[in-house]
Image (cartoon, rainbow, N blue to C red):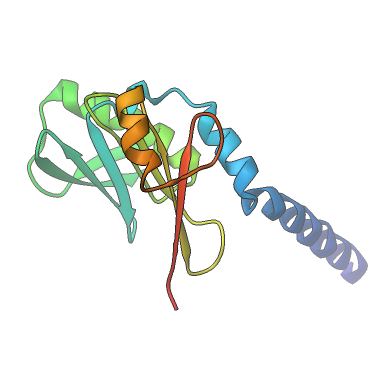
Length: 154
């Protein structure tokens, strides 16, 4: 019996160890992020803090707690269509494993994620050449679509 438990422990250990490698690989994370459809995030900013989702839309903040895919709004409750849009965006956000996502009215995409301890990686994908030239001055070009910045705490 103890041999079976030991075997299961080692199997789970190796599975989690190898799955964590791609989780912490910036190139793999950006590839996953790049393949997503960001329509659900249009005109939204979503951040997750301590199990609460902070959703900003049209200069209003909504605080949402999810329990078994049931959204509980802690403050003002948006109208039904907005609740559906926020729900779809939160479903996608949970799959992305990022800290924040924002898509503005021009379809510029901002993503914040943590790949290494004490560092936050900021990714930006401009929607047009004008935005592209503005952010080229501030951020490093990561690939043909994304700009990149990294901030680490001490």
